[in-house]
Length: 249
Image 1: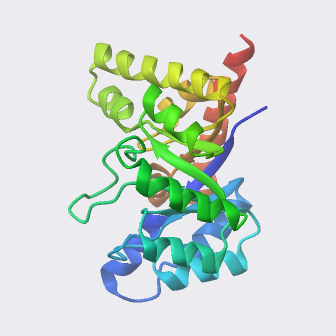
Image 2: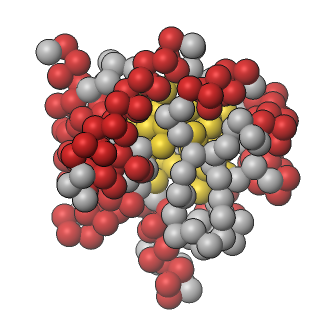
């Protein structure tokens, strides 16, 4: 089965917010992405509202025809918003105001006491809980212990090493991802991957049989500036399909 493609539309909102107006509209981008073949939409409502805003989440839930993956920090404010808006899924992520983008996985081991109650509240409300974690055995075990059905493995370090041409380092990171995907699936977790993926790295990681979903944002939105969202998503789906074909090979 081909893994799903989730499209993150945060950076359409980044461009909008640069001028302070209403355009470009991230909800329109989400609708176009779905029409082009996206299986779901991801949006991260950050504490500082640097891109996605509260009204964007409300409009996404009202208008899109595919699941919304609501990325959120583990805070009382964000848990309250998720419980009120009831997205299809909530992906718990680390968040620092000083970072340009998410810098690593959520500390589900050291932060178990904070993450577990939040995950439980969301799960009780019928929201599918995902944990954005490093490809680490201890993090996988913590996810299983707190009853999260899904983990999203942080692919950023691997993608950065690939982009920089650091072959041995990239291979080490990919080996960790490969083992974590297989191990997590054996433990009953649904495996998603995301952060920093482009056509080439998406093709490679889609070849892992345990990977059920790829969530990609910045690259797709950036490429769409040059060739449009429909073509960009079509090329990404083709890359994923090539990776899936390698599963059988």
